[in-house]
Length: 127
Image 1 (cartoon, rainbow, N blue to C red):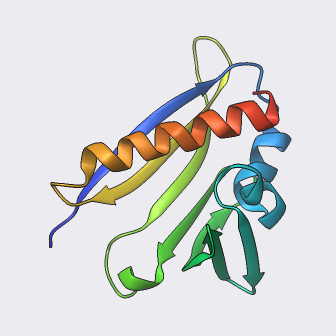
Image 2 (cartoon, rainbow, N blue to C red; image 1 turned 90 degrees about the horizontal axis):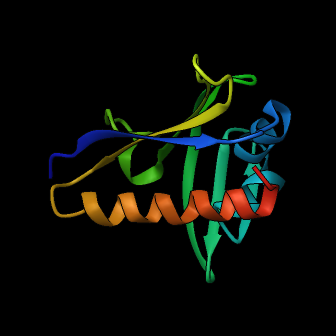
């Protein structure tokens, strides 16, 4: 099934770049909002939700800027998901840009899932 790339931008008022970076790039930070448990071995991340594991590989990272992961089932494809920190020019606030890929029948559900996860991130970190 062909997937379509999409981006969602979340403005994060009063966000600290270091807090946001730790939240998207460390196992402890990701376990606060993205998954129940995150285990890392080198570049292999195992995310656990309700006792279900899913593996992703860290394929690219630039400190304090972005992390890019590829799910195991998407290995050797163009599909990935990325969490990118950017500063908004007008306000100076930070934004988190999520890039992901979804099939035509998954787009709405995946967008809602990201909305929910980012809301958890905001609650847990106060950003």
